[in-house]
Length: 348
Image 1 (cartoon, rainbow, N blue to C red):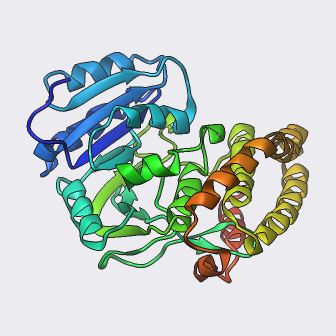
Image 2 (spheres, rainbow, N blue to C red; image 1 turned 120 degrees about the vertical axis):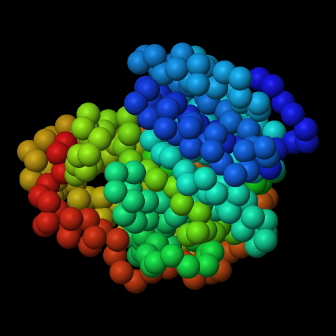
C-alpha cells in the first residue's frame, strides 16, 4: 500500500468472496471517481476460492491508498467488513458490495451532502446493474410487525432515510467505532438494519442522496451466469434462517420498551409464514431450520442481546416514542404476497 498527502475523506471497504466476475468493473468505477485523490480502497477477502483474491491484488497494483487484506476464512459480511474497517483511515467508511459499479461523481456527491447535513450515515440512489432502472434507496420505516417499508419516490434533494441499503452503506468512521461496528453474531442479513437502528438511537441521522448514482446487481455471489438475466425470486434455508433470526435480534437489541411489542407481533407473523411456506413447498426442513431454528438461536444469544442492550443504553439519545415517527401503517409483507401472486412461490 502506498499513501499520499493528508488522510482521505472516504475509505471504500469492499468485502470480497468469490467475486471474480464483478471486481473488474467495480474497481474500475472507483478508479474513475472524481474524488479519487481523496479516497482509499480496501479489499478484504473472505478466503475466496475462485481466484478473485489474486485478481484483486493484480487490479490494485500501483494504486495509491489501496490495500488488499486476506481475512483467512469466510467470516461473513459483518466481521469481514469489520476487519476491513480496522485498516481504514478515512473520515467516512463506505461499505460497498462487489456486484456494483458507481457513476464517476457518486462518492464526491455523497460526501458533500453528508458533510452539509451533518449526517452520521447515508447512501446513494441504487439502480439496477443491468438496465439502470430504479432498484431502491433503502427503507423508510417499520410496520406493525417489525418489518421494513421500502423508501419510494423519484430523484430529488437528499432526504431522511431509516435504513441505508447494505450494498452501499456510508457512515462516519468515528460513529462506526462508537457504535461497535457491525454485529459479528449476525454473520449476514439485516446487518444494515441493525446498524441504522443504532445510528438513530444514538442521536445521529441517516440520509439518502438521490443525485449520487450506484448500480447494483443483487445476490451477486449466486447470480445467474447470463448477466442480462434478471435475478430470480428465490430463497434458501440459509438466508431465511439468518433473515428471520436477525430481524428479531435487531428489535431485541434496539427497542427500549414500547417497541418490544414488535417482537411479539413478528413472532406471530413468522408462525403464519412458516405454516404457509411448509404447506406450499412441502419442505419440512425449511420450517425446522429456518423458523424454529431461528427462534431457538435467538434464545441461545440471549446473553449477547443483554450485553448489547446494556451497551446501547449508554449511547441512547432517542426513545421508542421518538422512533415512532418511522412507523408505517402499510404491512410490508403485503408486498411479498403481491410478488408471490405475480411470480409464484420463491424457489427454495
